[in-house]
Length: 100
Image (cartoon, rainbow, N blue to C red; front, side, top):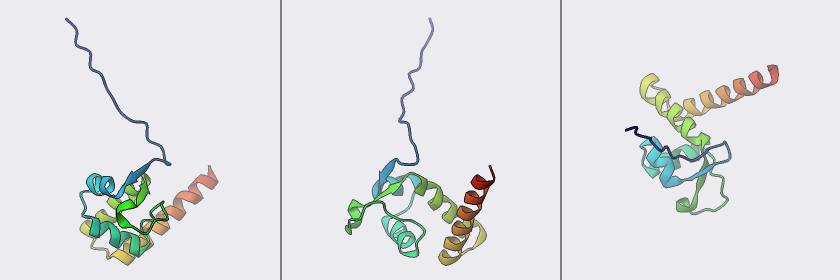
């Protein structure tokens, strides 16, 4: 007898939005830490609503949070330094796209 596994998933693109709660779950962070990242300019909620509980983020925010955590934990970079590093990494990515 053969066993067939059914794989289920969701297609995710750059425009996919996740809630604050989902972002916290994906990155194992408390909401307060995400709020700090927003205040520092590292993250930008896609919704214009002022209520934190109604914030949504692009899925790429998960990568930004994980990079920030890595910079802080492993390299001892403070939050403003992490914001600068992410800005420079974004600029490098833009320049690489222009070259290609």
